[in-house]
Amino acid sequence: MAATLWTAPAMAQVSLPPVNLGDTSFLDGVAGPGGLIEETLSVGTARSFRDGRGRRAATPRDLSTVSALTHIAYISHQKVFGAYWGAEIVLPVARVALDVAPGVRGRTTGIGDLFISPVLLQWPEQRLFGRPFWQRLNLNVSVPTGRYSSRRLVNAGSNVVQVNPHYAFTWMASDTWDVSGRLHYLWVSANDDPPDGLGARSIQPGQALHANLSLSRAVADGLRLGLSGYVLQQITSDRIDGVAQKRSRERVVGIGPGVQWRHDAVTLTANAYWETAARDRPEQIRVLLRFSHTF
Image (cartoon, rainbow, N blue to C red; front, side):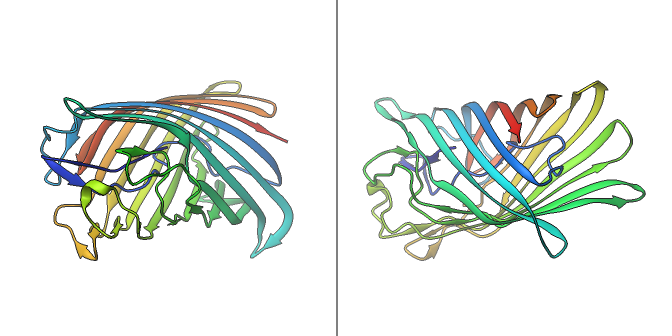
């Protein structure tokens, strides 16, 4: 996860802050009382940037990111509205390298913004069309703890507050097939210390909807293979000094294969994604590896 805010002759962009795009996939909605420690490593690269019309932009030229997410969650036996109540935190660390034009480069490494959920509601197994069904509601927010400077071309922190609740589910369509997903809404506060190159007093990314969806099949004891994807669509325009910006609604679609292996309390998941249909953002190739341990 990393924030990239830049100004270049061919484009001036206010980026959405980093969100969960494909970081979760198979059996996502399955959980119960207990604890979780999870580490996710993500590597991405982009050499294609799209403008607000979806056309290829001349600049920036290259973006590479490496991030590690530490996720700690606990679900209690206490019930609220029939669901087990819990809480979680997610702390990202990121390395970002952005080449805008010859001689215009940005590099940063640092801690990103801390994600906190004081309200996590996990419903016990239910039935949908006669098959097992799990669901979870998570009221997630972030606080601007990440490294940020208005003088830097790229930052690990966003200098904003995010409200990013989501609804997660898993439906076992058969004894071997599962369908899982997360549906998110994103609201972002204004940044009153925007990048110096914008010459603005404040910037505010627009609101957005994004979702992860996956389909997997058990092929052996503890082993699943499948397909995962995500979509992000910004639904309101970015604002600079309170003025809505034309063609500033980001969009991207990612899809790719995945594999998951489970043994006792340990789960390893790997996903690869190829992005397409982007607007006002880069199109990346991304690889994720996630290690989970429940207790």
